[in-house]
Image 1 (cartoon, rainbow, N blue to C red):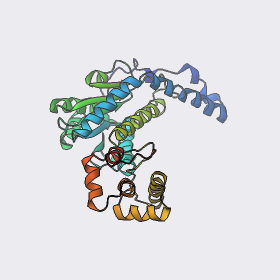
Image 2: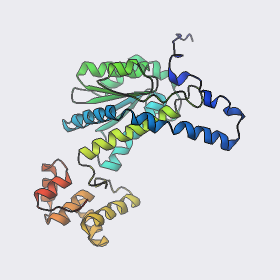
Image 3: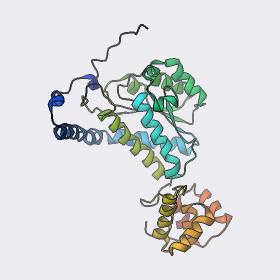
Image 4: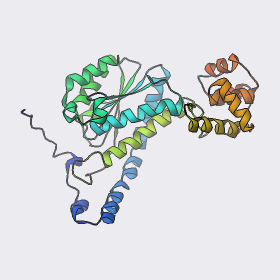
Length: 308
């Protein structure tokens, strides 16, 4: 197979890191220490770009409020990080699985098995967005360390044709992906510990930024009260206990009463509202729906002002 030669030597992530040039000669502790020192630079790089992250987060909130979706798209490590963040939203925030979506070059198989050539498939980038039925209500966020991944660029270019909002999280300044996006987030973390291994600093930076984006969006959408995940899905024993603890924390109820309310209403948020407002039955869910799921707003209208 003949591969087209491309220029990547201008990418920061492809430069040799002078601070780790001798890493193969170090002791185990020295290697770990050197990696830790490089990782410490990530939060500083992110701190310099918080305004851009906030702008993208606000665009995500706007799309979700309009009934659109947040669609992450990427290849390799970047694609897996997008799928990971999307998959954690339903259990943590009670979102519909279709509201935050991760799309990866190579599909589900690429989550487990390396399919590195999938990132070059521009046609698949476009067809995957068509399959997702991307539309003007959605926001599509491309993730790529280099910002030049053909699959991801093609996906965003198709999304642009539909009128969808475009964001990106990249680690290389001046990239095509950043120029394509309406809301670019560029986190230059510098040369990797191992030259070109973007699963390291670049991947960590992407994970941190996606955590910020999805968590901020869910807070703004009323999925969090104070700092408690009131929409947590009680889908296993640990999460049932967490939901019960949240009810006890906010209502002061006896744990047994809290658990009974959780079982009856099916969610911590509804149980909390019922116990504090005195409303019962279907009216609990009707009132919460009227306030788009914002527990604090629903309680305030009912004359209840508990401390978060």
